[in-house]
Length: 150
Image (cartoon, rainbow, N blue to C red; front, side, top):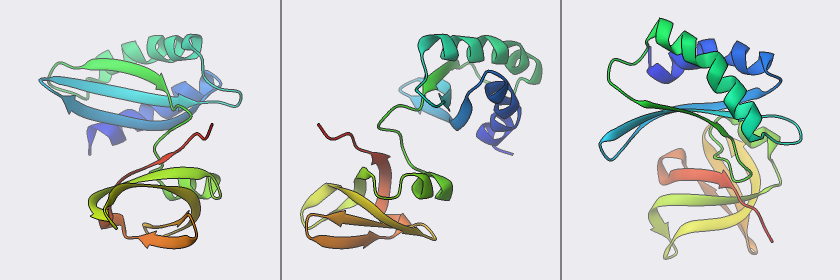
């Protein structure tokens, strides 16, 4: 079982007990450092006190379960207004919202396509970009996240 799956299993009830929802768990390497990040969300937005409360509640359980052998930094963060969309339910929840798709290879010379999320089916993302509707295969998309328009 992956670290993120193990952490998700015990983080979910803790986060919910704190009045938030678990958005995502990631375990990544940045340079020579490793980071375990738990992203939380709640109606009206997450504040620093929410993040601190979840971190304090999770700390002893992380020590007890010890899901990661090497040293790492543990962070609890807000999912943010420009959060990444990963799961089918993320795409369903934000259908019709402004998004930014980052591609592995350019499409018409662009590696970043801003648009409106119009569809999601079996990993394929359909975006309305200007006057055209484009569907990208999962294998083409490096990242899809919400986009804030000013």
